[in-house]
Length: 407
Image (cartoon, rainbow, N blue to C red):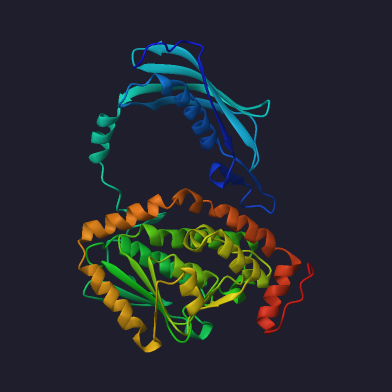
């Protein structure tokens, strides 16, 4: 460590509170508030301490937090400018102690104490190389290494290390209800527990549709708390697709709307028949998408995501291909054959390299923003309890155009 570090010196860091820094309180009630979370506040203060030490580090050195205590005294809203301040209070060999504080303007949000140690990056790297990524869970879904469970809404066939799963509610256009959500969670758990037995997954729909979205008729019968819990489960489910050890190929045979569109674009590849269509039509029913917006924006960009979600328009398969939402188009009669050819191509790749490449690509894409789906769900629930949403559900059931009050 370079000389010159003294007690009383400070480090400071300024953040704008974005969704990843927040927690939503009151999730089980009709009244909620989204505020700067305690873990994020502690991270701000710790990183302010890191900034104080940065000018004094030798090449190959870094600082790591070893101890922190903190009081959270006040809240700050989404979009607030917050400031972390760390003041050096003690120097002992390769450890430095701090008083730390966080502010919103002149308002004290939190205060505490923190200790950082000076470490060699090479040694940290050696320690990390001894720890393999945890294969035991995909998001919050724990691995099931047992037998493939029976499913009420999915048809699953496994052959030559390829699992073909068919969304199997054709009379409802494969709309995702509570049972299908449970079945998909169980299937993801089973895939997580069988990385060697199944190396590639093909996902398609029974009948003329891939997936028409959430089951709106069931949604109209759910209490708000149940709708919230279901939406959060579904958000975790589709994010879990990315952390599965197997590449997922969506063979989109027909309309993929709302949750069906999210299901498709959460897969690693999308091959679409010319009969396929893609859209996020929730706004036409009176609410926002409850999850999946970060994945959509990562694929097609903010401008096109705004167009798709604010207008509720439906893209043809060709348009979806032009937008980058679809990798390849195929004739309907050739769709599954083309998906199987891609699966066979992937099976020729080294298994570990395939899994690791998928993992690092999804990690590098910016997974933190994708974990902010609670804000998506909050907006969805606020809309769902509105008169316009009730009118949208009624109009859907009556097969008529809705008459929204907000027009």
